[in-house]
Length: 472
Ligand code: NAD
Image (cartoon, rainbow, N blue to C red; front, side, top):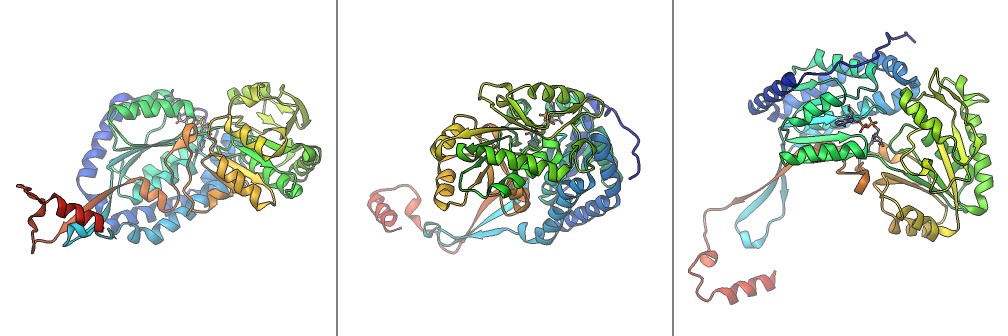
């Protein structure tokens, strides 16, 4: 692999240029160019070629930012985005067609249609943990639906931010698709402008800031946020399989995944066996010393490294626990004897530390989950259909899997998003097109007849109207 030049900081944008940029995008949208579906398809194809051309740059950038392994960069970033693009290009013409809906007899003669129309100028703000996918997938939706877009990558992954900026600037005029790099200050400038849609992925804390800013202009928002997502293992689960699938979902990207299992609830009678299998799996995946594994990423920066290092003091370490500040390495770790009062159970962990907490019976597991904010994801491992049913019915979460972790994101027919503190709105597949489209409902009314029933003077027509409504 080529060693990328280390990029340590993203430049901040200045307030005036941000303001002008959004004005220019407004003018471009008003020109009507993006309303043409063929234009959108051409731009998406251009994006497709740009991603292919920059694939190696993206691998190098994410390796430089947090030593993300190529296999993970391909499966969760570049390849993932390419699949979304392919699906969108294949279906866009159909998705963009007006949708005829059935008519009410009251309107006879008439026909009704729903028109998907672009909002206008969209702002897309991304986090650092999947710095490419979480910017590009919303961008595909925004472009497919016919919007202009301002894209703001995270400053915490500066190498990836630089490649995304270069790739988009090489291929699109800023009036249509623009990248604005920078940190908190830049995001604040961006949020001072008026948009027609804001799509934010990041923390619940910043999600509130974004929603407050959006409220100023009544701008609709999608908030893709985080939280503590549980994996629950019942005593009748295939424990080896559960250990493998949970370890994969947890230690992928070194635990810096919004839908990673944050902690495990395991039925007490199988806890020891499960913890043993988990430890064994970690060794199978990453070897005796995971620091030497080429398949294990690093923590994104010193601040997160020191935050996570402190959490290692909670409970009893059953596996892992080693750290190296120079390379920001934290071993895949399993913690036992953790209580809900420990700091590790207060906030989203967002790192490779997995607390395992025992429970007695599914009712208790449900209670434990429902005592906290609605999580972004929930994973339940059990071979019992009735327990699966019970858990699905009585817990509330964004999305998840039965007997797996994370894989629900791979199906573009499943809307992906949170609920409550883990977010609002959803996307992926056609959902990404829909989220950036206003559903404009239009009735086309026939003119050859004009029944007088609705017009004043009403005289004694109410009984007749009542009869009609009763008949419907
Ligand atoms: P973050 O909220 O700190 O930052 C996200 C973006 O907001 C960045 O571009 C940053 O520049 C900007 N920002 C930060 N502070 C700001 C402020 N005070 N005012 C205005 N803008 C500000 O999130 P992060 O640390 O980059 O990402 C981690 C979080 O994102 C986790 O909570 C994770 O669960 C969540 N996440 C959610 C999803 C999802 O799809 N639901 C996906 C990935 C990450």
